[in-house]
Image (cartoon, rainbow, N blue to C red; front, top):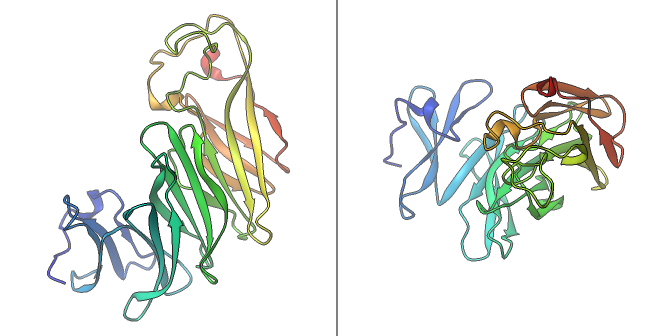
Length: 270
């Protein structure tokens, strides 16, 4: 390939260094005919160029990576690429929902056995996929869900499950359905979002709704800020989850996820 590794590659969205620091993957190109992901050695020597790709994620414990291509028609290509030549060694075609909810990012488990994606339509739909990179099969996920899922799914340390969080598209979980997000809350119990959990061995999918009791009259200082849209930094913790609640408050639930989980009072309520 002719493309050079940008000197400021660390500032490029989606650029990732291999966990051992030997390789760098970086998306390049603003125009469709130029777009792709390049792989370079740390000294800048080119290794591979994947035309039409949008994201690459490394496996920490295996000389492999997962690669996602830009949508073509109504589908996207997810590939497994392997050392030493970093060529595709497996591929899966994933449909793009009619809403345009397409894959925008990918992560790989430490062992390299599993991949998980993040989907977005940019118009209020989101989702995720869970993929077995050994068999190149999609084993779970949600392809089109009303809401806002800003982060990649997270694998548990032992790779038994993967979790993903989603909140309302434009926030406003405190607002009554007949009110606007910039109107004070009426109070009572509200649905603030959800946590999805997929068991990797079985593909079993669970959904846990996140509930919160609101004081009447409460309203965020900036109701349109992303900080208030839903849970962030979701991680698997034991049999449960760890997350940051709207406003920056940490929260941990130990034990299996119930169908509905009542969250603690937010410090932001005063």
